[in-house]
Length: 304
Image (cartoon, rainbow, N blue to C red; front, side, top):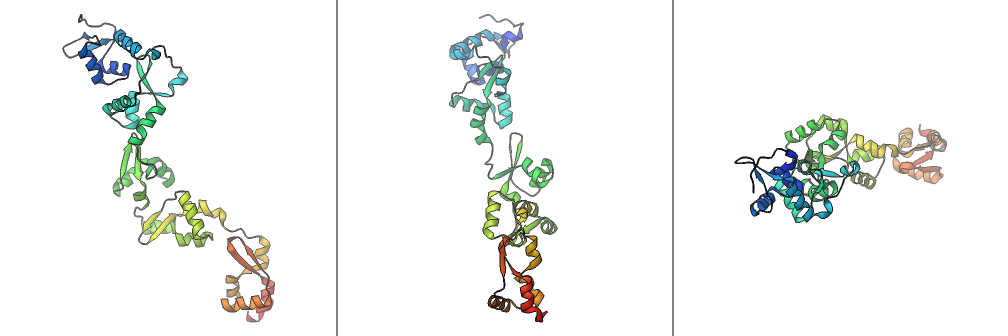
């Protein structure tokens, strides 16, 4: 084999370029060079170049259907280069080639580029690289929810000792640790409420509260024996569900708790006498019971 320095770069490729062209690893190229399967030109004592024609011949023999494969601009959107795969999924070249080899995946040629289907790469590397999304927040979603920058989110996590992972360019923060981070009492009092406070404020029961909170993955903060929930999330879930009482009810009826204060009587007497007198009552949203105000006046007016 003659050893001449090439003059046309496009006709000769380096070890790395040859590996990308065939969609194999560098060790595979070296093995083929040592076995004599691939001819090469010695450019210097430490540099060799491989004729593109030899690589094309091997590609045609190994993958005859790929030689004439042409990708349109639209098709290219569905493909990704090796370097993009390595960067996106934060993996090493050795692992990349090992996984592709074990799954029998070959590159698709486009000019001198070796391309891989994005969907295949996602299926192969996403689960191995990224944490379970059920257990981790991304800095982006926390940034939107908390109203502060992603950089501030990550800095806060590190400052509080909250576990942080990186998958490619994405920063992940442990959900449980973030939700249970320590908050100043003033912040808790202003922006959070307990379960009991929420049930009383929105006139809802425990089942309604927990069903909504759990199904919407609402952030919670544990401090001492209490669990706190963001008021803004509580409003979003329950504010519109505050019982709507018709104006005519508010005008002509009164709830028992207000009647007790108005007439200065106890609950037991109120219940017994209204039942005996047959006072008209109505039940509304929120499980409220309202009593006819004019009838109560006749029954208890001497007490006012």
